[in-house]
Image (cartoon, rainbow, N blue to C red):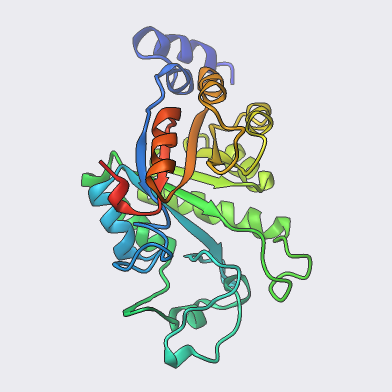
Length: 284
């Protein structure tokens, strides 16, 4: 440790210590991310949400995308939104369960069918492999960490601490392996997970999710030294003035969902770090 301060002074003269430079750099504004890849299936009939084709399309046409992640019994992180598995093709019609209580082999056999679309469930490592391509070096991937499940999955509904600790460890290891840490955002309301990420890897952005009382969520994020807040546009507490205050404290603000022109216009007026589009047609 005795060599740290001279080294930092030396670096500051030429470029600034990395964390300080990060904190002093201007925040980006109005980035456009696809929600659940290239859009939730409520609005999208081109891709099944949270699949590799959906993610790849977003990376090719937007500034990045958001996906939902859960961890299997084997410790593998998979892309999926709902607390219980569903939308099965006929070969999985009788299957019941949730990803945290299933093995990798069981999950790998699942086929999803939505309307006329068919696809499988993808591992996060498959998405990381695509994101690590040099042509996507300026793209972001925001990972919505799921933790609230049906009681059939976890008796007390919320995933236990050991689940989040193992998941954070695995996520960090894969991100380092693919050299994409500074392109990743983790967003969740589970602060124990965000704390674990912040403690082990400062490069990954941590965003606290909020649904109401934007100023309070911002205060929590600041106290925890998180990088930002991911917040619902449905709540009236998120205003231009409040977002401006949050940005003055160097917080990145994500907003969602952008599912109509009214929501899009509100998001643009807020000038957030990023807005999550439920439909790609709202991109410019």
